[in-house]
Length: 109
Ligand code: 2BA
Ligand code: 2BA
Image 1 (cartoon, rainbow, N blue to C red):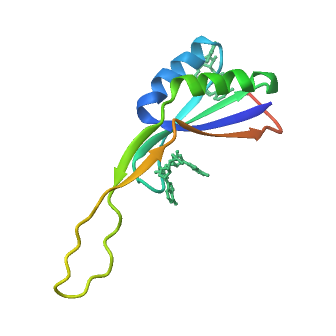
Image 2 (cartoon, rainbow, N blue to C red):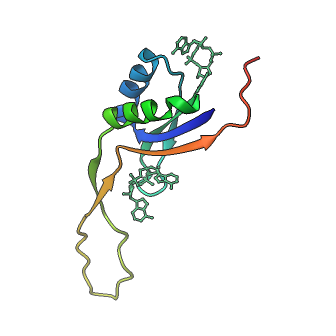
């Protein structure tokens, strides 16, 4: 068994979970925050048998889209009288960042 951990955009999370559920997969969603942008994203855990992993990953790919975001870099240390004009930096935020972990035991009590 594997545990698929998919970090996705909050806007894609509902659609992905609905699609997974309709396809018979079980999932748990938690609200998370990206360490770089400090914006909300969603982490979806899907526990499933090894042979289902490619199918689940395909559904994740189909339902999660890459986005471009702009961030303002931190201002540099300034000397008196200097002026800093911030120019936003383009960042590609993945449709999904996925980790597939080995499950040693699954229990339901
Ligand atoms: P939920 O997804 O809200 O599911 C609540 C209950 O609905 C489940 O109880 C199960 O009886 C049923 N259910 C869920 N998905 C289903 C599906 N695709 N087809 C048919 N019935 C379905 P539990 O199995 O005891 O799960 C309780 C909660 O534990 C779930 O809440 C979910 O948050 C988590 N969970 C369970 N199995 C999981 C797995 N393989 N991967 C990730 N999270 C899981
Ligand atoms: P954030 O940490 O908010 O990162 C958003 C996007 O900013 C990243 O997109 C990446 O393009 C860029 N970025 C992140 N850290 C950076 C850094 N140290 N220097 C330069 N650019 C950086 P993605 O790579 O698609 O990641 C989207 C979200 O997935 C991340 O949100 C984070 O929550 C999660 N994530 C990605 N890789 C991860 C990893 N190896 N471990 C844990 N979480 C990860």
